[in-house]
Length: 280
Image (cartoon, rainbow, N blue to C red; front, side):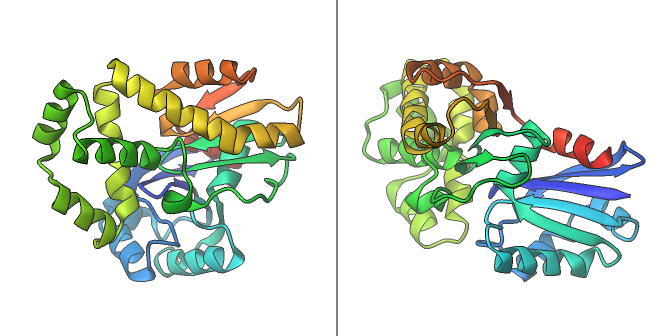
């Protein structure tokens, strides 16, 4: 029995399979080793009946997690998971590796992540190329749900949202400036708090203001991540992975066209392709 895990900072997707067939699946809060310590991860695992019921039977685990970008972080997460899945051989890689395998399998290509976080890398069919992207929700993540969340929250505090959205936001979240600032600057998991406002974008996806914010965020992403990568690796297929990319596919493709870029594929949930890859 194997388990495949793909985790952003907000949500971790789990698939458990035997002989290539899915027998269980679940989601849980993200397991980013940069933000989640051993205690919090184990507490989250112990709340999932699905994982408890199969923990003893899983023999191999393939885990792709945001924040697992260094050997130290990967070993740390593998050690933590090993305390729960005691009979499993655990392989941990970062989320860009999972995105690359999901989109390309063993082929080359350029991979863009637009989910709770943002990233981009060239994949040579085996390993994503190292770069200076992936700076997290404070220094980077342009185009992600974190970035969109920061944008909408800032506009709400400054009362720059259109009147209908300002009223709707206030009614939906019941937050004021002091509460927002406390959650961002004093409370843990600020990245999950900011990313949670992506629901507001989905609910108002046809509003001109929302579409403008999404488009500008995508344009920033292309200028920051995608265009420099394409310049280094011209002629390669372009693949996108993640909730934001999958939810706003039309806007993403339109933005790409502005920069004369053609997108080969957009995958909202890479966990399915990853399970297929490791089951075969």
